[in-house]
Image (cartoon, rainbow, N blue to C red; front, side, top):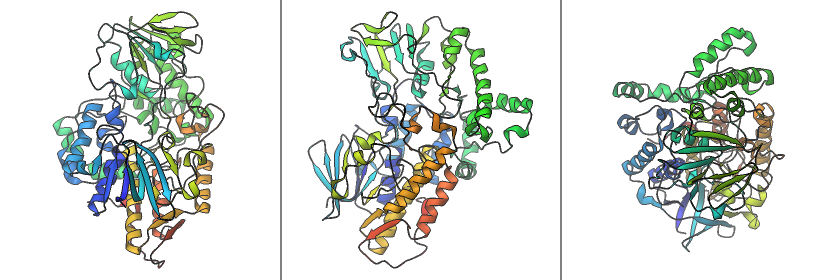
Length: 553
């Protein structure tokens, strides 16, 4: 056996996971497909890429020394700084020597007779391990549209995920951006005043609200350091894992004037305040959501000078906040510029990409650069890109073809010793991601400690436990307006065959972080009820697993 544990992915989750394993003296390595660590912050180098979580709530919480020495420069930090931070963490704790880069895992097959996982790596090696920990990233498989002629374009073209590492000359260039999701909104707001001409091709508009970013001074950072315990305690008790707590008053308990006064305050506050400090009914009540959505629509109309363009930027197929809200800086103002235009491809569809640009049903456009801001094969996409086979050679891709089924979002029946700290149906996708991954990594690591203490070498979720959890996840969707959205929260992606509209995939846990943590800690406290172990003693030993609340010192 080459390793006790192989971690796949060296992003935010993988870095913390290898830290926990190394601290325990476990023989482990990280296999990373990219040329270096960082995950989403290594790949996504497009202009405008930055946190939508407050920087100081996104960083790791496990080390007081790390918290004390790092100065976040902005309330919402940009990609270059974020990548520097992750490299600083790896260097500070000596983690890089446990990582292997340019190591794409093509397959992971469970050998039942030997109770080992065999991983085939793109460089030709086969590696074996007892445990595989998947820290693959929720949005790590980019999807391109299916337009004719995409390979014929003579200029530069790329998905935002693959934005070149070297600087891209934008000055004076004719640029197309296809897509107005979260990434497109960031790119458009950032480059509108830097290009010669910008044409935005939009299929469906997204709701968006101001990020309200600002620098963090030395004095402000000192205050943040003094408050870190309180900041992380607040994140732990909020449904989304952010500093933003919902307004506990009932939507209709206050007057219309009071509601608007609250919204006016929130619109000017940083980050997700407008979404997460709002009334809880905007997530569950159609009428409440419609009233608030109209408030945001009016804000858009005020910011965009041309009324026709403004109406095209207002979504009609979903309400504000029923899918993750993109945060923007100067996005709507970009459309007031003479060098920026909007093409509604629901009215004039793109027919093909040509050698010189893009042809719609109305006309031809010439471009120097085409940027595809067309999203990701979310949540399960990274799993689908690896040939994962469990007991009896069962394919995980085939098992999940109609949607994932998991136990706590971290284990799968029929796939022993495969752990997912931030897997489908876990508490990570619907929360402030690093807060969620610390929870998941700690819980998975505690499980490994428990197994070592008891001499177990095999752990698998029972079929009944997985069924109960998945049914619970499905029921939680029924309460939320998001169940109707064409969003990656529901598994929608028109660029992925089989993921088009009409089939809901239950990807995320909607019960909120506190309920999720309480649930998984209860499982741990009951000697990991719902998990079957192999090898070692079966005696119950209480108090060994502190669950997700414990972090590495």
